[in-house]
Length: 458
Image (cartoon, rainbow, N blue to C red; front, side):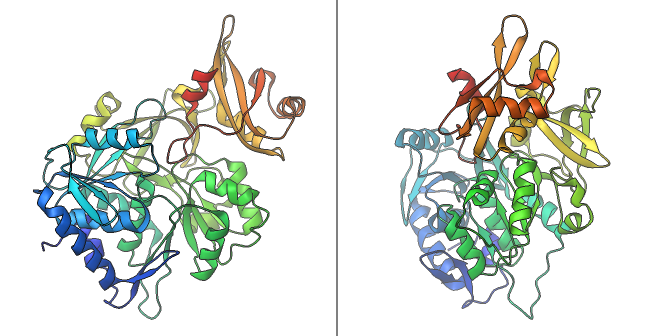
């Protein structure tokens, strides 16, 4: 059986010996030899349907998805993760759009409906978040994605101390999403074992942190909020650092998490096309606790600038990655790439002595009679109220003012108290004209808020 190239080597070249535990789940623990054995067994089943550089759709999560990802790379195929929790129609649509020549479910493989062939070096296909429209496919290469990992790993100065076992990399994220894939590969690149959570639950997360003595991990904002609100989770020691990923994190929740659990939240910023380009290091947390809430500083080699800034320095964030983007990524970005190589992110931001603060999305900015209302600022005030679990603010059309803010709130707080709190903390034009009490907010698989769906319902 052919051994994989590129990212696939991270498993085969991992520094652990054959009999060392490489992957933990809540059900089992597997040695490096056992993981490779399962990978090679599945690769033999995929091979008859995969002639190299063809997409292979993997409808799986957790350990099954991890095994399948490397099995696809052993066959020199292109990995297409598909979230099995989606409706059947959505799963079929992704498979069809990817042109997959094979479909993997669990430990079995069968032929797929397509026969697409990608360029040499192609690794896997991810999809944009769909916050502003239908998700779009993004083809990543082995080399470019490895650079994305090393871009973050380098500043963290991760080293393996052969005198003691490295701390496992806890992955409380779906392996069908970019965030899960990235952090699994990140852990292997750092020479660490992996601890996979099939589905996030606060109690299980706290138990795994203690059992495996996790000192740092990643969490999406929704998980951070869940831990903040769970009275049964009183201790997360020895956790010291949490990297917030996949969606913007409210500074309120970041400060609350640090105050409650003694673990500093290291924010970060990136996009599916670019990888993480801005972030924090552990040293930053020690030296700049006053900057909590910022997404961090540009990683080495990354350039940023603010376009068309207003009087407060807020404008669209433009980013230039440290390496040349692949042709497929460039094609997908379209007119978002400037002539000098900077990419328009669609996010509003400001710079503060090299630190980047995200203020919202360009398309989310509310223009109320000529006055700018940033939804994130209003949401920050709302979630600071005890009893408010989540909040989202959108701009609704108004005949005289153009737009006015409307707030959607998940919690148990009266409209009167919400209005009173907003008026005490915001100028009058930023106060929502009404409050809608809802059971939940629409989010995509990665936890990002889908404001467009709220507007469709308004």
